[in-house]
Image (cartoon, rainbow, N blue to C red; front, top):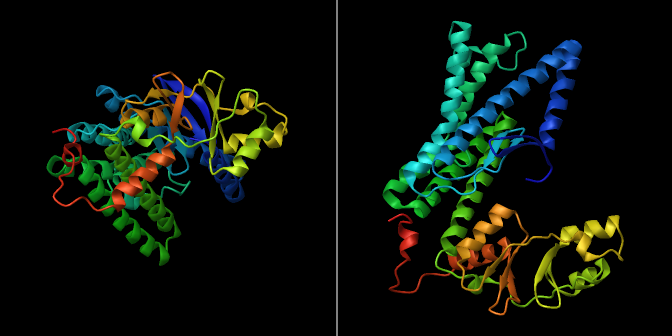
Length: 373
């Protein structure tokens, strides 16, 4: 995720802090300082840090559950709204997704139980003002962990409750259909949050938008995986493109950008090998910082993954997600670049597939009915 700073690596997973989280800490410090001075500011920041340690532990619940099923988690990013663990893939067997989804809230439930045992008493959420610095920190922290359990139980993506709902639905209707139903339910709840937010609580508007976008993103990601099954790299690759050579300058790239509709340009040497890919953003950044005479070799993304014509589009999609690459090169039988594939043009294929009605009398592919049958 962009604009994030790595701070630690634990068991192969990088912990990152998004810059907006640092802005949250600054805002908390200023708000508490205005109310109670330096000591209040320090306590406010310390409480937020403790809350996000609990969030990290929540995410590691998902990480270790996913590892049990052979799924790696390259990083966890801390945002003002919580943490995001980036799994390399979501297991499509419902029992596996159920375990992974439940593991995070279980961590918070255990943390709340331990904190209440340390306090020697239980105080319900209704009787705890989490924002009140007059209440001791452990009591507020225990309440926050209970709140995280309840919040993540909301049956909507990207909360854990949405994944639990999909896993339960998938036992009866398959992964793809379960995702569509769960996403629709989540978007319906988002509208409810937004409606209540209009009449008093602006935070609900933000939560509603967050839930709506999360549900839409999850549905789109699954659609992309479903469409990719049964297709080859040759079926989806861009073949009508303009490339750059290793001797090209940023000025050459700018001219190519103006006369084409491309957003990325493969850099190909004289033997047809893919040396890298120059994106539009990298081009503009190099133009600002180094000028028109800079070499594309200094600005391009190197180590672009490549596949063969007959490899599956699903493998291409996996490489795009795992490597966070701007594209995947497709090599012909002569080992020369035959085309390339980006997430954008896979998305366009999805839109076409969704928009066109099925042929009369045709049956959907088996993977679309039940991916694990």
